[in-house]
Image (tube, rainbow, N blue to C red; front, side, top):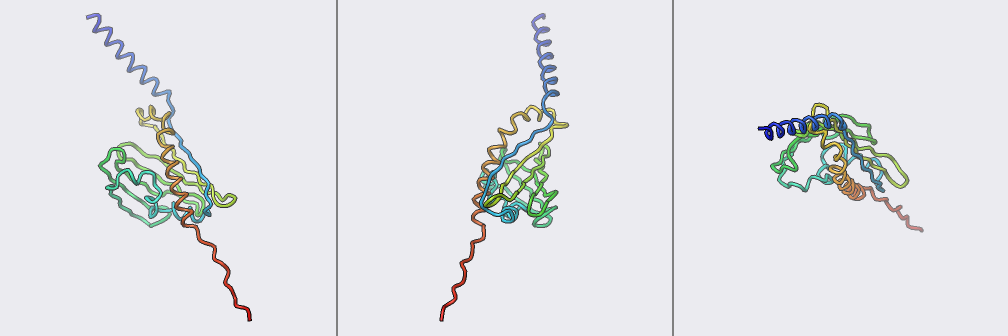
Length: 190
């Protein structure tokens, strides 16, 4: 009986310790990655404003080729929306909607992961010597998601590599879209 009582106290103590630790963990997480490209800002912006090109550079598009997508709202700008559904647990289902834009400079989306909460993603495009500097960030809050706080310290390591892959794909796509410089027309001499 004493052993059972001691075991019960140990379990209650452990649960209490885990709860206390959860309150001390961060309430939010931020992930950010950047890359440089020779593509001009307007070319990059045209690829990220809306979801028409999203799966061409998305780091998650190849995870499940059977994912079903639906689109609503305008094709670009605030209100453009994409929903996805997949049977694969690593892909799941959810939606993203553009909630703010600074034309030619940034696109902010609200991400909703079914059963997992919301996050905000931002793609910032800055002109740089010879092209653009693109910064992709993700912010998520664990307010009301006590269990999520335990994942917060690992969020950068969980999402960061995907953002790096997506930015590398976006770079290749943007540089392939860059307008070619036209050669000057030759005028025959008399």
